[in-house]
Amino acid sequence: VNILVTGGLGLNGVWVVRKLVDSGFEPVVIDNRRDLTLLGEYRDRVRVLEADIMDLDALEEVMRETAAERVVHMAAMTLATEANPVRGFGVNAMGTVNVLEAARRASVERVIFTSSRSFYGDIPEGPHRHPAYLPLPETHRGDPILVYDVTKVAGEGMGRVYARMYDLEFVALRFGTIYGPGKMMRHPGQSLAVHSSIIDNAISGRKTVIPRGGDQADDIIFVEDAANGVVLATLASELSYDAYNIASGEVTSLREFAKIVRSVIPAADIEIGDGLDYLGLPLQPYCRFDITRARADLGFEPGFSVVGAVKRYVELAGDL
Amino acid sequence: VNILVTGGLGLNGVWVVRKLVDSGFEPVVIDNRRDLTLLGEYRDRVRVLEADIMDLDALEEVMRETAAERVVHMAAMTLATEANPVRGFGVNAMGTVNVLEAARRASVERVIFTSSRSFYGDIPEGPHRHPAYLPLPETHRGDPILVYDVTKVAGEGMGRVYARMYDLEFVALRFGTIYGPGKMMRHPGQSLAVHSSIIDNAISGRKTVIPRGGDQADDIIFVEDAANGVVLATLASELSYDAYNIASGEVTSLREFAKIVRSVIPAADIEIGDGLDYLGLPLQPYCRFDITRARADLGFEPGFSVVGAVKRYVELAGDL
Image (cartoon, rainbow over all chains, first blue to last red; front, side):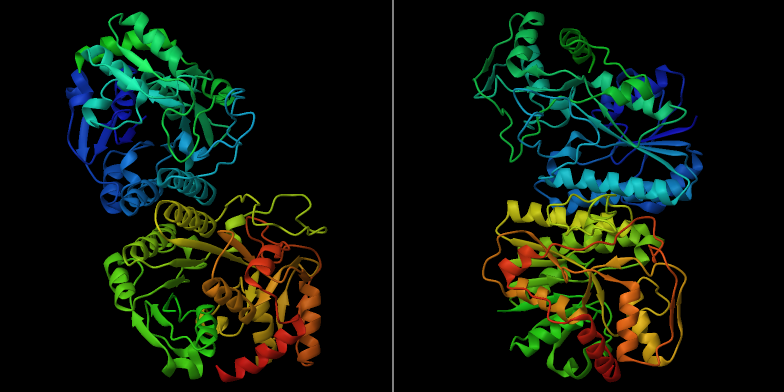
């Protein structure tokens, strides 16, 4: 299968690319900046093309030239969308429409869209929030609050439109909070990657201080498990649904998480206050995801316990 | 109040502009093509600037230069979105983000977005459909099916984001099926404007044949009533909500409608088959809207009965 990965040099993208290579595929990566750092030792085993998803014709040409059958669309702006809504909406929403259109023109079979838990936006007060954390199914209708949320809702919406109108399969993946190595390196100072920064700080001997939120739990997933979900959705012969939660199906409080980090890195200096909502965003995104669909359809199973993931993180961080 | 109207030369836009002029305002219109036909005798009383909503800097400049306080954003692609999703999403969604951003930069007070019943997309099976037609409130969560639907959901979503983040009021208006003169002139052959074409045909002595759907009812609203809703939302000193249904709050079956047209134009030759769903789209958009919010907050009241509207239509069509 010819697989093209947009954003394949990004924090999450590289793990998808690594897994594809390990499985014997030869994924072609497009990215708008040729920074191969996170590919590590895989950098020589992957074809990387520089292309911008805002350039529809270039996208079409790459898809044709590589005879792409499956396109994993991971290129996106993350936090910067909030400070620059025009560019954020352009890259994330309009860019996704470009990918869909190029895929249609180039007769791609399937577009796998790494959407986001942001699709659900603000989790409404009730059983899905603390303390019950009832698993959130894909049928939940979201309440988008951030620019990022709206761009993911729009991207998914257009994906469904394309799948209905044209001979193109579309599937959206919505992830638990992904943690994995490299975030601080790629986006220094970004504070939403709380779990990653706790581990990074511990590894580097820096103290972590989080004023409040130790009681807040969330569904967190290690980046390699998330990548595994992407690969499964890419390779699945048939998909029953057009959206899947890719998450742990569990919740871990920030305090628990810190405890596990300390168990792996005894010198870790972590100070976390009590209470909920450590992110302090204008919405409550924390929840537990229902992963029944992904289990049944994709054969997805989170492979890492939190302690296993932290150990693996430490091991990987040394290589990056 | 300085009012700027995007798409103010369009089928619905001209009636908003006419009403604003009649109320003593001097609206400035921007449109991407300088076709003043539908403005009729108002064409000399309105300042019209050519500007494209895809050009953010041009939009900002116009808003600054005109010291716009309220921007009525009506410019949109309609049916053509389905044949050209990239351009449709660009104009309707990205274009709306441009209007919001320009408004923010130019310190506009309020953006009034003529969204659409398409926000609701497919009306789910149940009490809101035939035969019960339970009024649909603004809190209903939609199921977008068409490109057009997704663009309106995205536009509204970004409007709410802007209102939350910046000092900018945002209100979305969702209309019943608008009928009014000029549609056939502006968009010949477009078949979604069923009610308008029945009247146009009757006026021109052409026969109307609609194979099925006589029993299908829908909430229809005369274009001048719709325009009145827009003007009220534009001028209201305060708005309690960020979305309002602007509709009749009633349903009229296509057969009833034809009967009324025949009562006004006795020579009308209209043949309509039985059954439901005269549009035959991949979704069921027909419903009755709850207009409690618009009544209470905007003082909106549909002024035209269907028979009154058809009479007025005939009168206006003579002038165009």
